Length: 251
Length: 155
Image: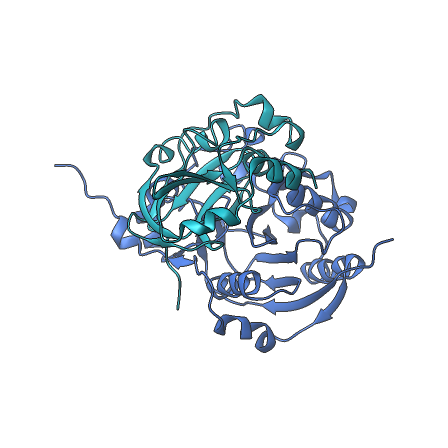
């Protein structure tokens, strides 16, 4: 049996999502270590788009402004999510070769993550990876995105412990949808993890315990991890100014 | 210093399926063109005088999956051998692409704005990404020929 890779564990809570994304990008691009991050909630509700996201196609700008939502375009692919204190985040950052036989390409990575999280979720329902989303049956509870660079990869997930439907009103129905969504509105398509799992605290602990089964975990401090932010590397996260995207009514 | 090279973004548009049967059958059937030079990171360069056309190989597009978005540098930007010049999105993943040669970007493939899937269907022709005026033509000699690249892909 292959030895378990050494992975640095960083546990955070109520850490702002913008800073989390900036830290993740630094750990991916400016370190050679393997990482597993858990962030239990973000203090400010925010819209986070993928690298290819277009504000006027994905966001109800006036609604988002009214709700004072921060809008971020992140460095990874994937779709648009609304996150807040009820979102639990995880991030896997790995060097190619750390996991024996796993190739550094999008499909093998995302498929591997299904097996990685299987023991956490299968006791609570029909868990699977469905067109790149984590679902119970036909309901999505976790959104995924990835970045690959220089034989390193990052896979991060936003788990919906709970969500406010009012926040979802700030999102448009995306033109590109997974087929299993079948045109459902956010409220009918998404599932709250609290409907299936008994305890949020227990869930967060199980995420760590599960990682401990797969890796040789070594917990580090935020201070140690943040040293990567001081290095030179490509930075692709940015905050979007919604005012610049307000469309003027046609005369 | 933040390295913000990517000012030109080609948005998500048509979702054309991968038409190249060879690409969908994986690396055993990936096409390699003898007249191109290849980087181990799966980009190709086609010399045309003091300019080289750059893209990603058939092997690379097959491994990435359906490309839905391409981000390229501005015309006039400098690219450096081995360093990131752009991003390709597929399967919810943003994957860096690396320049096989150094020089100045003199043209980018605007067709990828509306049809990023050209990277999948025609990686060596319609899916080209940038044209670079070479600052050091000797770098072409460091790249793999088609036979060596094929062998590299088999490992």
